[in-house]
Image (cartoon, rainbow over all chains, first blue to last red; front, top):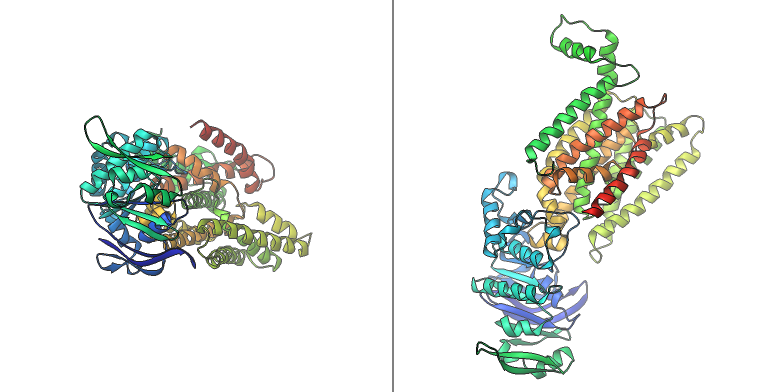
Length: 258
Length: 336
């Protein structure tokens, strides 16, 4: 479990978020929602140990993030950035192998055969083993996102943090990435995700955290807190949640802007 | 070529390097024939083989130090360029980006002005080269973590290099126009004439250590080229790693510049050529850059000392060859 106790975070002395109290569990998909500039990325960076806390504490298994090295944080939580390019072309298998850096078993801390096998297993698990020998620079945005998820899995962490993983992706690829996120939490990972799409929280999340005005506005299960009024307040835009029954008879909630 | 196993590529690179080293020993004002070369090598192992004393003198005292120097300086500048390009995530970065060449140039110019001997010139050049980078590092630390660290380093490098360029101009301005000024100008153009084996003791050790250490940290450089945040979340101590790469690169470049003067383009261009040969993985790219750079500067130096009655400074030749080659690389990469 990751515990956030009265966390204030920001850049330098500028506080972006304050008084955050949250528990993030393994086996849950936790979505962070909020307008642009509400501190989703700041909170993310603090959880990943990339930003020093202004106040409060973040604990992994009762150990404060302040006391753990980057290497040990990397064993606990891995990071999936938005799909991006690199200035130099690397092979997909080499990119995924980077996730095994903290488990390197080869000569003088270089990756060994076992590390390469683990990296290939991660590609296999996501069904993208055919990309292994391709150049990371030349695959599509959706494929890049999958490769970055495979790299995060290769770290063999307890938690995976995904920063707007479906930004810049088409609908089909977005759905594929979200299904992978759900599969990961079903495997026992704790998945934390930033998103600008409340529908993803409705359809996939176990817990939702709403951020507004530098504070946690609401948090709980999607059923408890994702209501028309709350979302209207959160985004300052009138929206309505409507009940729908899809063709397989399943009841779903749809978000409609007014 | 690209799909050949790495081991074959390195065997080819090593073979080309060796062949060129041997060829370079033969080329020059005093031509040495293939038969004389063979006799020279035989004479090293068998006393009964006799060779002309001039052949032995030219090879051992003139050509060998020079050929070694060209190979080591080319290799050193290139491996540093490749490492910096990976770390700064920028294919346009060269080894002198943090001011080492400007600092070393000032050190050499000062030594010439003070009438110091060639050993002290090298020492002065090395000290000011490393000192310039230390100043850049200190300025980037003082700038704090508010800005991207790579950006503050590059900007500080620009500032410190400008200051040292101005200081070099002051030294040129006050130098004796008949004596020290030409020496300063000629040194700054880069060249390897008059080099002796004793001048290379330092760079051999540093180049060997740099080659091994940077190659070993190659795959961390791969991670660094995904950005600081991603490298940190994969468990790299980014600040510490960056410090060691800069320290190693500075020692390598300063030791090269202190014996050769300022030779541009090599550290920028050769990594691109090596990337075409072996790809971007730094653990393979860095040693490949070293050998390719060695071969490149050896060819350029052979050209510089044979093409005209008077030797052309290396900095001029590398720029003349480098500029069109860079356009070729740009056009090729835009097609990819």
